[in-house]
Image 1 (cartoon, helix red, strand yellow):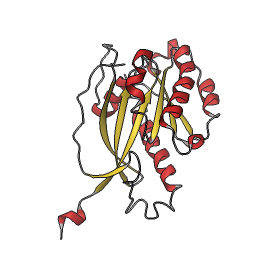
Image 2: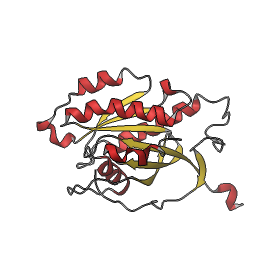
Image 3: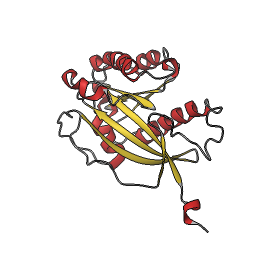
Image 4: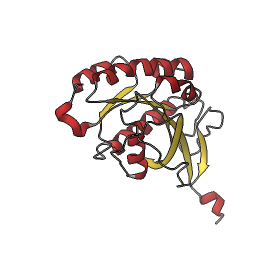
Length: 221
């Protein structure tokens, strides 16, 4: 049998993490991809990314997860990378009310810069990080859930990068949100998921098996 016909294909999805500096974006990515965590904090400067392979609901997926700087003065470095994203993950710190209030601005900026074809239905995942610090909670679950209801395609998870709590579950849901959006385009991609062709998409693509991270873990933010 021809090995080329049996080699598995993967759908590649581009996921952007946005949020204020210090909410734990890099820690989330490093814990999810590499199963590592450090208490040492150093702000990410500019943009970095890693990749993670998953199988969700029978579909093989490679996530390209982009980590952008939280400082306002570095936002211009990251904005060019918003375009072509399949999902935007907005991260806030459960112990910081200002970081939660800021996610609305991050969402609005993302929509302006990325200019998705259907902004009202674009998938957003909202992650409340640092669940391990519940005694210092400043943002209630109800408040976050109520905010998410204003969007058509928003999901909310409370997670802990430190304890590796609910990260796998959250990113599986990210994939499901992306797949759901693609299934809505069945007229354009009639053979999904068996022979999906996303080469005309700005970011999605089909690639061969590859488990090599695209970058080494850097600082934690």
